[in-house]
Length: 186
Image (cartoon, rainbow, N blue to C red; front, side, top):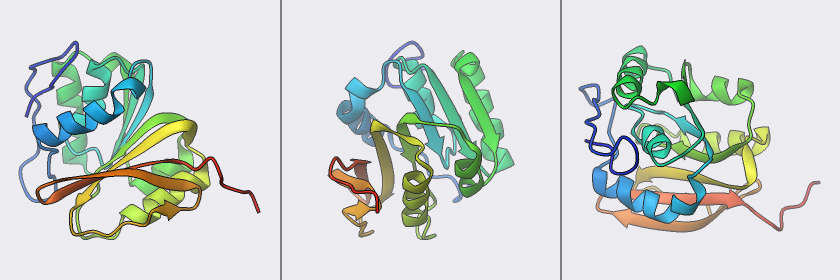
């Protein structure tokens, strides 16, 4: 697993061993960044369930202004920091070792890009999207990128978030959400 493009292009990223962390395949990462490429430069990025930090690090390498990494695993946080140091991107990063739900209650947004790649089959996607919407941590023109199992059926809308694109890559799907232009406050 390597950084695909930008200032840290080609730098190897390290990932914890075991089934708790499932790194985003390079071809999936490349496909994601082909879709969000015009939203990365100068962006403030939130990488939830960060694992190795690959998505946030790829964003920084491609010109994001800042990235915030959140993972509850101390082992994952050590790997994220190691990867940030090896890519020389630590100066534009903040890393938090805490559950995502706690982070969303405490982080000050808004963010231009939010990546989330939660553990599969744990029921974390919908509650996390709901919290993102409820807490207002996504900018009006921002994007939430959700990596999930292809067999997962995600709703087209959650609160004020609407899915505008979904792509499948083998057993992995990626859903893209943005704030609906037609949402009403009640």
